[in-house]
Structures are given as structure tokens and as C-alpha cells.
Length: 223
Image (cartoon, rainbow, N blue to C red; front, side):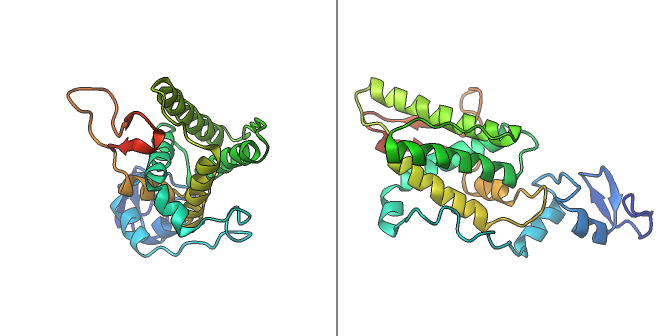
């Protein structure tokens, strides 16, 4: 059987993205470039084990914001919470790539950077619809959480803390960038560390986030 992509070499792999058999060379060259590879593809999983990630263009994202080890340790639960929100935004938007996630996170960072610095509300919606959906989904969930905490008389999340954690997540996303046009290494990273849980007792959805009163600092991540 001949590879369905190059029509030259012998096909040796069943490709779920191409829905046909392809050769190893086309798999290596077209993986997450022209092919929308499912995250559970055995060849993609193997490739991730030996992946070389691209260095961030322009250096560390948002280098003007200092993140200390003490800050990250003190906000571990917030890191988990916002990471789950980004994960949920990724899985709720079929076709979203790591580049879309990074753009959406950067838009959020710009909003919270302005709010934390001046108190002004600045909302720059990305032209990229996938990035805009990520931005909108995460921001809405944060606002929903703060509203629930406020109703219980608790302390809502500070904009400065949200900003710092979003910058941390942006740096993680940049660190696992494989440089491929349709790359989803960061999406896979999120799902590996924050797996989606099956619905409990027949309830809809999975990986839900719950809050215990009185403060947002008592976040419990269940998925």
C-alpha cells in the first residue's frame, strides 16, 4: 500500500487524522502541521516523549512581571484552578491549538495587567475566534467564582494574584511549544496533569471546580 499523502513511499502507519495509511516520513513531517492529530494517537504520544520544544520568541513571556517561588507556593490552589479553567476552555473549543491558547491567555494578562495597575477595565478581544473564546470562557468562570464567594461573604480573588498566575501559565505554555502550526503539546500537558473526571452520579460534565466558603483561597479542584 502506498502512502496516501506523498503517493511515493510505502504506507506503514494507520493515521487517524488522515483516515488512511501513511508512511513514517509523512507522519513526522505533517504531524500537527497539516494534520489535526488526535491527542491519543500512539505515534503522536511517542513523538512527544522525544520532542524538542522551541525557545520562546522574544524571551520569557511577560518578563516585566516577577514571579517568586514564594508567590507560586502561596498560590498553588489558584494555579490549579486557573489551569483547569484553561483546560476546560481548550476541550470546549474543538480545533483549538496551543497558539490559540497562548493568544487567549495573553489577552487575559493584558486585561488584568491594566486592572491591577490602574483599576481601569480594559478588554481587548482577540481577532482570532479560538483565542477570543478562551479569553471569554476563562474570564467568565473567574467572575462566576468571585460572585459566588462574594455572596458567601468571602474574600474574592485579587486581580494581582490572577495576573501573576496567568503569567506563570503563559510561561508553561511557552515552554512546551513544539513549534508546529497545529501543535497541541500544551493542551496535552494540561490534560495529563488535570485529567477530566467522569461525571459523578449521572451528573453532566466532568472536571468540575467547586468552592468552599468563606474565601476564594479555599478552592478545591476535583478534576
